[in-house]
Length: 288
Image (cartoon, rainbow, N blue to C red; front, side, top):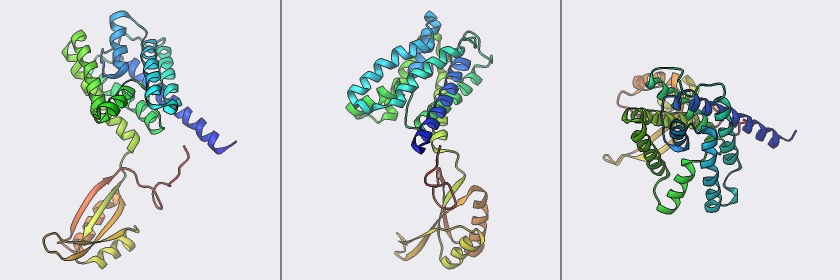
C-alpha cells in the first residue's frame, strides 16, 4: 500500500483516539461537574444543564456554521481534518453519554474534575493540533479575530473563553467558574505538552578560557557533538568561543561537574530543548 495512504490512515486512527479522549473528558468530568471551561463544549455544558440539550448535537449545531464561515474567510482548503473532528467529536460525545451518567460525576471532588477534565481535553485537542487539525469553535473565531482585529490568536481565544466562563458563572455560580479557569489552564498546559513533548534534552552554552579542554570533555567523555560560535564580550571586548551542545537530562549534571573542574570561572547557560531532531536524537522524518 502507498506510504502516503498508510500515513493518512494512521493519522485518522490517532485523531479518532484523541477525539474519544476529549469526549471522555467532557462526559466524565466537565459536564457532570458543571465546569464550562470555555469554547463550544462550555456552551454545550450550559445548554445541557439548562435544557437537557444533548451536548454532541449542540456542539455540531454551533460548529458547522462556524466552519462554513471559516471556509468563507480562509478558503476551501480550510481543513478536512477540522470538519472530521467537529463531526466525530459530536458523535463520540453523545455516544459515550449513553453509557456515562451526565448528571453524576465519577468523583465528588470538583477540583479533581477540573484537573482531569482539563488533562483529557488537552490531550485530545493537542493530538488534533499536532496532526494539523482543530476541534473548531473557539479556534475558528480566534483566527477570524486575529485576521481582522490583529489581536494575537492566543489572546483572542482567551477573551472568547472568558465570555463563556462569565456566562456559566451567572448561571451556575462563581465557584464552578473558578474551577473552570483551573480546567482551562490545565487544558492549555496539556496541549503544549502534547505538541512540544516532554523535554528529555537540554541545550548548554559554555563560555570558557579552557575551550580545548571543555571541547575534549564533550566529545570524549560525554560522547556528544556541538557547535562553536565566535563571540566578543560586551564589557571586555575580547573574542571568545561559545560552545553550544545538546545533552540528555541525565547527563547535564555530569557536564556541569566536568566543566567546573576544568574552569571554575566558566560561564554556562542551560535551557530546555522541547524537540531535538537529527543524528543521535529523534529522526528528522518520522512516520506516525
